[in-house]
Length: 281
Picture 1 (cartoon, rainbow, N blue to C red):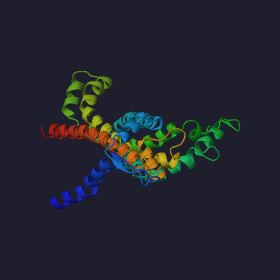
Picture 2 (cartoon, one colour; picture 1 turned 90 degrees about the vertical axis):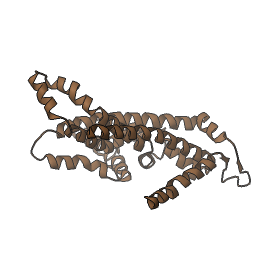
Picture 3 (cartoon, one colour; picture 1 turned 180 degrees about the horizontal axis):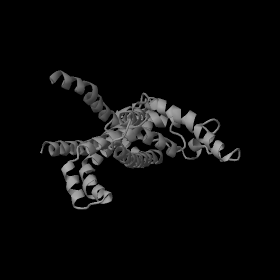
Picture 4 (cartoon, rainbow, N blue to C red; picture 1 turned 135 degrees about the horizontal axis):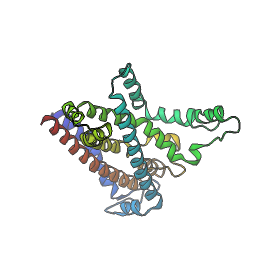
C-alpha cells in the first residue's frame, strides 16, 4: 500500500498543507509588493463579509433541502422498485441514468431545454395544456435557487435510491412473516420494521450526499454563474481566486469547506462501519 499512500499524500495532503499556509497570508495578485504572513484577517473576512456569509447560508440551505428531498424521493422509488414486476431490471437501469450524466451537461439541459421561458419544455407544456394565455414563468430569473435545486435533486435521487434499495434487499424476511402472522398491517410493518432497519442506510445516503452536494460547483457555475444570490462556497472560492485573485481569502474559504466536509465524512465513515458490523453480526 506504500506507493498508493505516497501518491495520495502528494496529490492531496501537500496541496492542502500549502492551502493552509496561504490562508494565513495577505496575498493579492493585484498588489505583488504587499505580501505578508501570520495574519488571521482572511478568516475574519470570511465570517464577517456579507457576501461570504450569504454564500455560507446558500450552501447550507441548498445542501439541506436537496438532501432531504432526494432522500424522501429515493426512499419512495426504492420501495416501488423493491417489488417484483415485469421489466424491473430495465426500470432500475433507467432510474440510475440521471446520476451517470455529466453535471455540466445536466445543468445545460435544464437551463436551455426545460426551464427556458421562450422554448423550454415547461412553458411549452403549459401552453399546450392551458392555451396561448398560459403563464410563462422564467424560473431561472425569479427562483434561480429552486431551479438549481431541481437539477441537483434530479441527479442525486438515484444515488439515494441505490443505497436504500440495497438496504431493503437486506431485510430479514422472517421478521416480516412473523409480523404478518401477528396481524400487522402495511403501515405498521413499514413504521416499526422497515424504517428502523433502513435508518443506517438513510443516514449513510444523507451524509454521503451532503459531502458531494456541499462541494457542488458545476451546476451553479453553468446555470447562473453565481448571480441572483446563488453563489455558494465552492463558487466563492473560484471567484476569489481566479477573478479577484485574492489567494489568501480563497484559501481560507477552501480550508473551511474542507474542514466541514471532513466532519461530515467522519460521521459517514462511522455510519458505514456500523453497517458493516451489523451485517457481520
